[in-house]
Length: 209
Image (cartoon, rainbow, N blue to C red; front, top):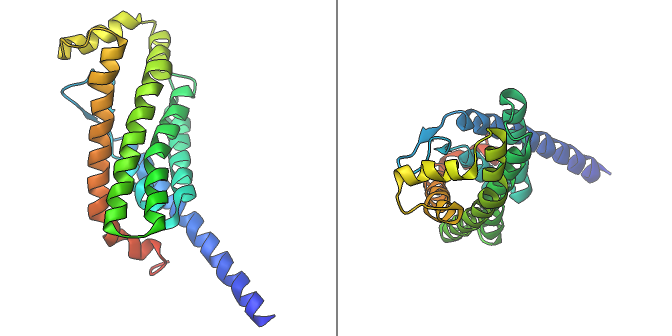
């Protein structure tokens, strides 16, 4: 009985610590989501943020479900505090795309926690996020932005054409703007995560909680 009670207390502390960590990392991710950087090869409505760094760190430390939870809370915070021009659909797409990066990375890293697997996981996540981002933009986000801002799709494409003359239609917009954007974001987020994780992981594994 004593062992059972000890296990219950330990499980309770673990759950409380995990929830606290998810909350803290979600708040950090939300704050990073509000800091955006314009990119020279994209129209102004595409901006880079680094909010996936806490998501990836949490996914590596606590598993893929925790990573998805951090992504969800981050997106919900942004939705309720900043609103949405796409009635939540774009935010849901953002959640799915973020999970496409973090979940595969965490699953591969969980198999064997080495630097090699971390890099392989982040590379796989970046590729999946890029594919998901391309599909989401082509079939969901860009049509929604077009409708929300009463802007014909041709005008959105023209914004890309001004930056890159090779962009002439929706397909070329996705392949020459959206795909490079997600590849760059995945690479930058992965690089920062790789540099920061070992410094943060002792805290997340309970040394200071």
